[in-house]
Image (cartoon, rainbow, N blue to C red; front, side):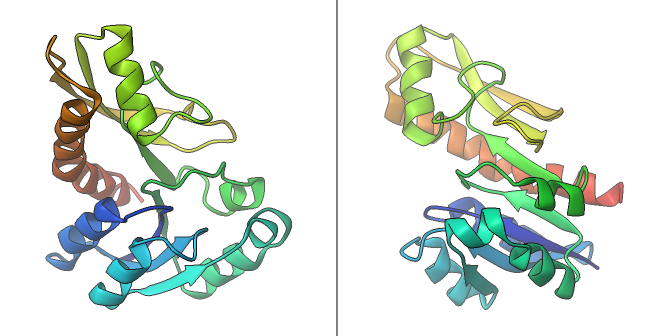
Length: 189
């Protein structure tokens, strides 16, 4: 049984969906949820799911090995970013080479990079007049949204779509496809 750590900064709906997906099987389980925000709703979800959670600050994340040491001690095999907004530091990339995956709420390389997350992305899609959008599941490297693309799933964008309706379509794709893509990657370990 492989062990997954999830980094999240917000509500944690993807983290909860992933945890539920793996709770039903025997390939992997979510062992740890980490966040950089002490007020993040993901902490309540972790408590409800009875998954250990850890809150850390910027200094701990970027200027120490404490997170890597904790993850090694918990024997974490795979790392998932699910709405985590900080750039992953070199020590974590080195500890988990090709074992960190992220989801982006657009079809990269469009609408990616620093500061492009959540509603900002959906607004950019609508303002650009894109006729389709979707999700990109990709490996994490030292730059925002530029790791190897593992999968993309698409939905149409209509002339009447708003950032909110686009967000709903994209969230549906995330919940449907992200856990299964994580499982495929873990099977390759």
